[in-house]
Image (cartoon, rainbow, N blue to C red; front, side):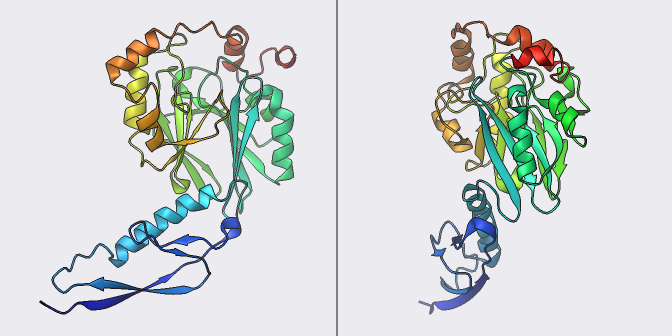
Length: 316
């Protein structure tokens, strides 16, 4: 038997912002370094196994991926690199997401609600951000978007929505577009089925996807009105969202049970609707028998014109 030699891998690990001192080398090693320093790790290699799983490239790749995931999970509220806020409208159970770049101070706001415009503007001012875009995941039926109000009160703000929605906005979005703010960007993925114009936004650098109503935590948006199509929604989710790495964090447009986020892996396994076969899913959606949306007659016409239709009435 040939002698086993020891290869030494030098790994420099740097922490930043509120990440603190937690660093992970790689999943397979299960090593956690809790000090800012240069760490020397001895890895056993054999002369008859030149393709060791602990190659420099593999370690760097795993380290980068794990630290990106940890960095987002451990820095809700911001770090040197980015700012993230998850905000809630208690009336419609809508989540609004504020994403900001700490260097340029540019920000985007996903799915603003008109009644919460004052709150959103105050948070933006408190954090010293410049709102670049007010972005909607789709034409909502349960609340009026705050995009129109934000545009009136924040001079640099432009509204965004899917081009196929036929709703008014400053910028119309399509599959594959990139929404850039500072050094960050969101990839636009078309995920129709709840409505024709549903979009999901993927923040690859932070391993996050904002799914709108396409994927909710353990559920999904209804498909019985507003161009709804259960088969199309199932295909959209499985081809555009469930193909992402399983540890990507899902942030939905709504939650009615007090949950704030999930992961792609969780929803693939546990989603009570989307984990089924396509035929089973279509049957489930057909038999839901949900009540008529309370706000739809007011919300839809307003949201088709960027939320500025009967603005004062909508606040009452």
